[in-house]
Amino acid sequence: MTNLNLRKLNAIDSTNKALKKMLFNNKIVSGDGIWTMNQTNGVGQLGSKWQSKPNDHLALSIYKSFDKLDAKWIYSINTASSLAVVSTLNFFDVPNVSIKWPNDILSDDKKICGILAENQINKTHIRSIIGFGINLHEQSFPELPSATSVFIKTNKKILINNFIEKLSENLIHFFTFCSTKSTSKLNRDLQNHIYGIKKESLFEIQKQKIKASIEGVMKNGLLKLKLSNGKIKYFKSKEIKMIY
Image (cartoon, rainbow, N blue to C red; front, side):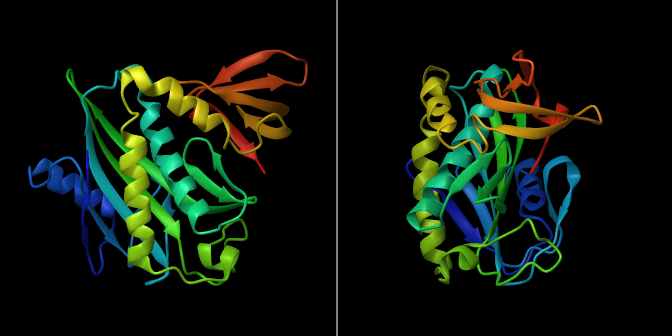
């Protein structure tokens, strides 16, 4: 893939929903996408809602078909998408950017971006609609103390076209590694950006709170934890919640 074809919408309820409808009607091809600064009913992981003010928050979704990626390494799509956002935020001088696996991008300890990858697995390829919700120009989050924005962290209002251009460039780069033979490289890069890695943290598992440290993220998406008793266990992202 040498470029993305991104189209601006003045307003939309959800960029992911709109793109899924276009895909169902065969109106898009791999690399097509849409973006808006006025998403009225965004959807996050597990159906959570994300409300944002017009002209402050970037909602962007792209459709990508992966024909060289085995389904067992499907989390490489999350990895590539996350690394692209991290590289973009680093370029614009956002400090201390990390990945709270598998869907959140943080600056320091606060969420600056959410990612939602919705995948369809076929015999020959994986079709993905990947949505990004990026806090760009918000000046405060009175009801969301765990959120932040590019403006808050840098005191600069980034031109939206410049941000999208850099993000597109990074997505194209990291998507080239979404093939079965390249998943190891993506996974190695991922370890350098995992939030809280090698540090004891508090987690909730089956309504019980435990202390453990993240030892890494496996290529299949499992989170590798070292428990306080020294035992190593592996968890799916939906089985565990990090309390921070």
